[in-house]
Length: 103
Length: 152
Length: 271
Image (cartoon, rainbow over all chains, first blue to last red; front, side):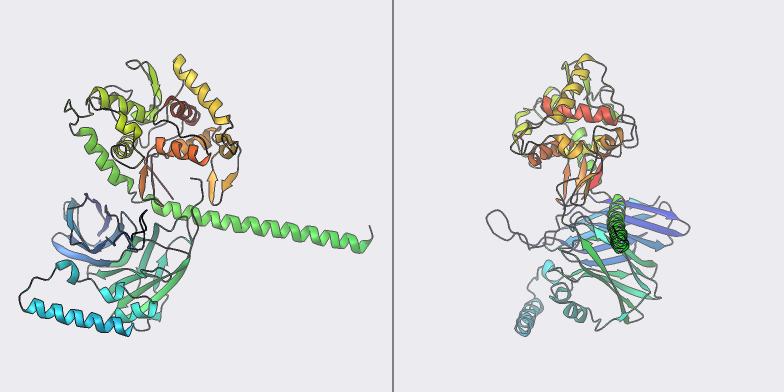
């Protein structure tokens, strides 16, 4: 259960733009610590976004996505008051879901 | 490479048998996540794993990003597909050890463009591969990565 | 000089001019690229994640007195956070000193919450408990976003701090004989790809003072202004300043006063 995401969703001219900022280390597994030991890979590998209960985006990620990932996309339709839900799962099996209201 | 694939198949079969026998398989190991694609070491292998073969270069696949990234840790990239019936958009960084950065499944109501931030280990071509109407298309853009200076 | 030599000289001069112009154009294209990159980063600043953590730290009771920081006076009255960051550093009657944001937070952490401030001062930047200051700085600076920087040294102690800060800015020391002015005391300087703002001028001072605290993408860390100053000292090969010491407040006073009038853009995002 990581730190909360920041989700912003706004509807305009029949298009809802969804922007998400997630809090995650996104460790590649390439880095070594001070003792020379490899820091294990730890990254979000699945993201699911729902608008008004319907899945609108599913993504598979690798560790080449930046730390504290940002994601933005647009959906046709949607209106103020609709609910946006975003879920991420990481390679350790940890998961987080946050929601926000479309403005 | 061949040996690795064979071993992987053995492991998958064994674990598959375990699963069939009712043993619990950790979710993290067998998520929807396309391991072969994400662990590919060459662009060709990643494309093969994605089922893309040799995608056709297309002007309808656009990469909107600055030509220079002030730092490779965070490089904003907007991948756009102007092709009808776009189902999937993938972003790859040719010179990264983890070459496939992301693959997005575009729902029918979702506009086929996505903005993400990727890590780039060095100046490299960024490839966007699009699956539309069952066929694959791609575009490439070189993004220069400067070594962060002492200032700022 | 005969006609051939003159012609040759003219040709060489023209070639040199063209080469310089071409070089200048190259530099502009790189500059444009960097600016486009910075623009693209503005939307969706991971500092917002730290602002949320900072707000929680501000509102959650803690310490032996089990109190939140909501009673803290940042200069505009107890608990008033909106715009307060844009008026710091300033003189505070209760402590009889000029304080910046982080030194003021230490005061409140001690008096309101009853916590010992030594761990905050001694721990390394980015480690607990000092890392809480980054989140608090992100939150509180965000509450001043869009407001004008309003720092005018009036109280004699504020004026003394300003003068001290200015002297420190030009003070050369350390094994390289660097001063802040070495990097920031002339217009148009840069280190590799980063332009160095001219701090003695309003625009340059504002470039720095209005954009820190900031999220540093290269490190994936939230840096407070004290952290940024500490790193400057390190780059100058100066001895490490004590966290929130008068030396750091004096420099902050000099920069903030010089930047006065410009708009706060915090929290920022940097390479």
